[in-house]
Image (cartoon, rainbow, N blue to C red; front, side, top):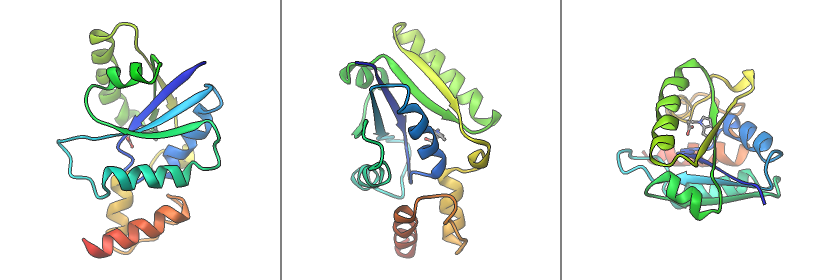
Length: 160
Ligand SMILES: Cc1cn(CCC(=O)O)c2ccccc12
C-alpha cells in the first residue's frame, strides 16, 4: 500500500492546494492531507476548522484522508506507515525554503523522501496569505478557493 503525506498549514485550503491533492492522489493508494499545528503562527482558522474545511473540499477524492498533527513531521509520516512527503511548489520563491526543509528532514531521517509537484500555472500566484489579505479588503476570492471555503473566509474575516 503506497501512502504519502501532504503536510501544510492550509489556512485556508486554496485551489492551488486542491490542484496538488487531485494530482498526487493519482500517484498513491492513500494521500494523507495533514494540517500541521505550527506554534510559531497564529492561524485564522483553528486546526479543527481547517480539518473540516479540507474534508469538505476533498470529498470528491476517495483516497484522501485528512488529519491534523503537531510535532516532528517525519515521525508523523512514519506513524502513517509512509516515508513519502508531498509538497506543492508555486514559484521559485518557494524553492529555497522547501529545499532546506527537505534536506533537514533527510538529515534527521535518511529513509524519508520529499517529492515536489509544481502547481498548475493558473494557481502559481495563489497563497493562503494572499487570499486572506484580499478578503480582508473586500476583494473577490471566488476564483482562488472552493465556494464552501470562500463563505467561511468571509464569515471569519467579518469577525476579525
Ligand atoms: C500549492 C502548495 C503550497 N504549499 C506550501 C505552502 C502552504 O502550505 O500553503 C503546499 C503544501 C502542500 C500541498 C500544496 C501546496
